[in-house]
Image 1 (tube, one colour):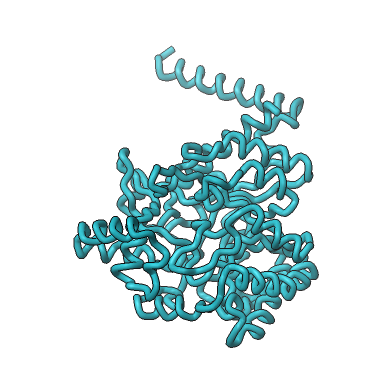
Image 2 (image 1 turned 120 degrees about the horizontal axis):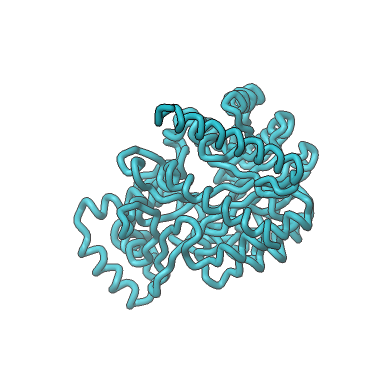
Length: 426
């Protein structure tokens, strides 16, 4: 028999034997399948038809749940039923499901409780009603003033050549003090930090200053031009929060929840507030969801199964005094959505994104607490990898900062394997 035919017959027999063995094992030990009914629902953030990462690639990455939003609809306006259904049909045609919205943005008028805020709240209520009618039952949102997140660099090069998001304290101070020139900014920095920020600013080229400005003023991925700023419009937005401290902003959040949570309950929608990113004050703006006690106060003020949390390990973890495992153990009943990533900090308080098991957070203990939480609650919580590194072929592509395909695929694979190992051992 020719060598080629012997090899072909051997390969066919091995494949048949492997299939027979696997099929038999699956029938005998269904409980040992890769995932159980209480495993995390593996999700992926998608920014809609304009996203450079297509739905087909999301499916190939192993995710089954899409996390998206109707980014083209202006903040504060109703999401129409027909547009929700159109987006949902597009996702389902690709063999995926749309189960989580990230985000239904909260209009700045609501946060400041001024202007046309009452109409915007009615529109928010109607959007929740429409999402529930379309069988979409988890809504992530945040209550951060002006910016959804802040980084000083969105293409920070790591030693291996991949790129990550980075926050550098003195670069941010240099922007605040010497590029934006925010009135009264000096009182937020020590004399030593002002001196360091001035040295950092002086050492920058004009191109570096421009990149710093663009990184900080960047709207969140997928946002419209309405939420991109120049320096003048940015300062005007900051000024509009004059007189609103953390207590006032938190009170406004609680009032907002008292108005929208009943609509969420009626629509069987679970709200999931995202923690501040980063979880400390910047530019004189207040923060309201930076610690476990912040979240606890919000849930105690408006007790409801529809008033819940997005457990973002990266955002909470940007404060090293936040106990991530403790947050899951103590606030687990409120967790409706999960972002898993971690950050790497230095002695100066700077941090950049890790991908996904490295970093300051103990991801093993965190995942273990999530596995046990799901067993206790008898639920499967949607989870997505967050802020992946730009790497490999994606280095030559134009993608949203933190949301290239390959880095998130790597993160999802790491998290999937970690969860499976823990599920089999506890």
